[in-house]
Image 1: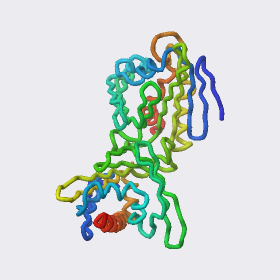
Image 2 (image 1 turned 60 degrees about the horizontal axis):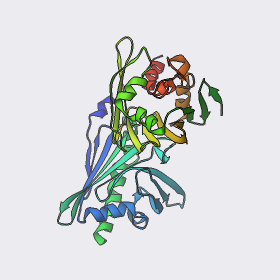
Image 3 (image 1 turned 135 degrees about the vertical axis):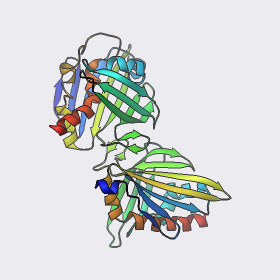
Image 4 (image 1 turned 60 degrees about the vertical axis):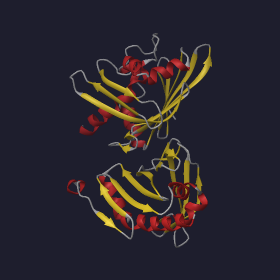
Length: 171
Length: 184
């Protein structure tokens, strides 16, 4: 495991770039949309259900209490119709700039079964209606980061991010 | 749920949680200060013969707390955490799951929820709810002496004094004890 600690794999899809940095996985992409629109796509239930997917699972319902300590409940549905609830708590909310959420809690402040990751989203205003979007996914261990990669992070997150790009272009 | 009563504190177990309750003869403002002012924390937080080598608190959501304890042998044990929620004089929530906002720590062990209820007449209903991510961690915390902390380590449990009583002290000892438990 130690040999992989320093390894930095860089995978590029159409327009997203993903990389592994220690315990973190990072996705960067630029959008032809303002930070406000990208932020809305993450925080409005009727928008997040239009683009958020995890592999074959798609968000079909969302209850988002977007404030520090607020809960995020996103119901994911698989191709076979099975559903699972994806529960997170927002740790930090800076409208149109920054959003931090974790699955370490199911609500403020009830520990989840297994703390796996913390997602820090940064929306940098590039001017001219463009945004540099960074999703930093931090794990508590290298093993968890590796597991996340094996679960398809480098494929699944860019796919979802392209869907996000398509949505914000229309807003 | 089992309960253990020390002179003035009651501790209990509820699933993954450990709970300590006590009535303190001081206003919520004073208890809150004792929990957040580094100068005051240094006075009561570390059980003798251990000492506090360094302490800093950035009391705001996302702010860090860093606390270095020194053993009698001179070994230093740094503890870090992040405040999740701060309601002055009423509520304080922090966790060791992050070493700073929002960098995961080595191991998420507990989340501490301090609640201060104003009982009037300069008295405070004090509750420390200590939540863990697993039953095993809650049990490890008990083995470290959560229930007996005050009797084992506190020199002035339930005694007078203007500051918060010493039965809360063991909580920040964990990282050191965890290492000891792990290393056998």
